[in-house]
Length: 123
Image (cartoon, rainbow, N blue to C red; front, side, top):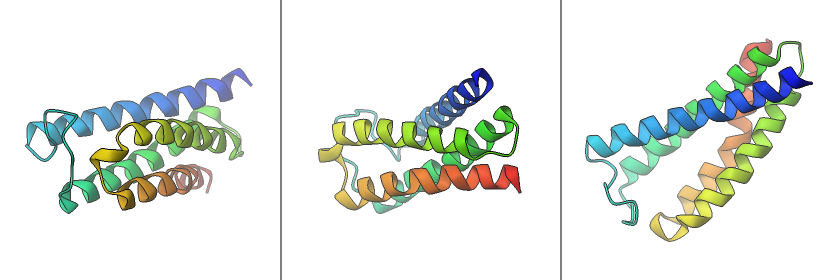
């Protein structure tokens, strides 16, 4: 049980570190505004953010499942629920900064991408 909890925490931390690092890179190259209160409406930037989120979710699901060991999807499913709750919280704070299609797509891809990462590990 403790191993599963630590695996979920590691997956969450891993996703967050990747996301923040990716955002820093996008800010340094000028794709994201340095001021986090400015709106983002460039489709290229929004698609890059979605691709990053999907890749990081797959990696987090893989990492969580690898650390948990065994042959269960449950740690990745728990991570998915936590990621979705955190995603809803953070997306609601920036709702006015990005188009609705971005928020809906971002949130709807978190769970399947995380479970896909677990599937890659378990197959």
